[in-house]
Length: 113
Image (cartoon, rainbow, N blue to C red; front, side, top):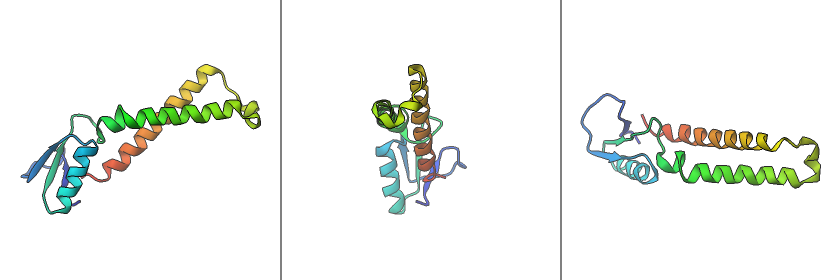
């Protein structure tokens, strides 16, 4: 993975430029770098991960998972003393989703220099 660089790195020559750091771009960059190519990924967003991490798959799964857990708490008699106002649930679910997205983006950033 020595050859993967973010565009903010010092500009130099690269063997291959990949547009987008989503699953396809990331996979291609890792494979090419492992085979000795010097790769740069061009990403329009401020953080790596592409739409899957920031707008699509991960946010929707994180929201669904959090909503399912909150529903379990709501219906489980062991947790009746912990109930919160309905408008508070969404705030907690949204924050949990944002934390998951942030963690995944931070982990992905470790692949890049």
